[in-house]
Image (cartoon, rainbow, N blue to C red; front, side, top):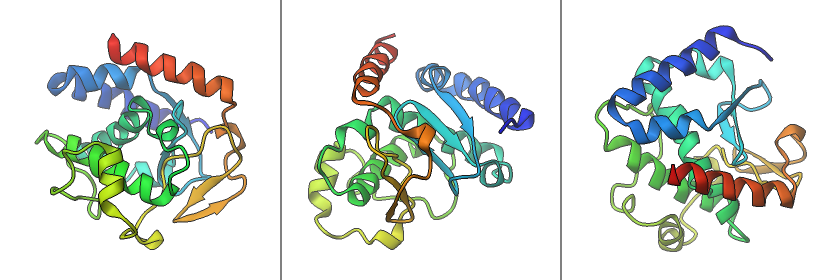
Length: 188
């Protein structure tokens, strides 16, 4: 699915983010963007960032920048790979707490209404947030935007479905390569 308008919006977003956060902007340059209607919002498998144009197009500039950054940070911080055997919904929630906490520190970025916010936990590591959450997270609260690499399980509003995005599935070798890719990107 090709969307020239959305491609231009992503490029403009990268320039705007660069003006206030060169580090975040540099990470955005490493992302691979895929437009699809197979997901309701945005998602990442750690390599590609999947964007639903119907969700993305109505976002105002600040929200658009924040949501793009949200997915890039998930990928760069290797949230899809770090999950291990943890509950995917609770893990996604914990990752969102940390990533959204990083984003809202910058006054320029405004996440869309209804985003996950836990100021009491956002300065902890994802693993610490996950442990503190216990079983508090309801599967109805969250759209899981972290697609599972190395398997054919994908998430939709707290449910596992199979397979939504065949192109989003990564082999174990691809996962190893991506870990090195983001490690190098962060170092640069």
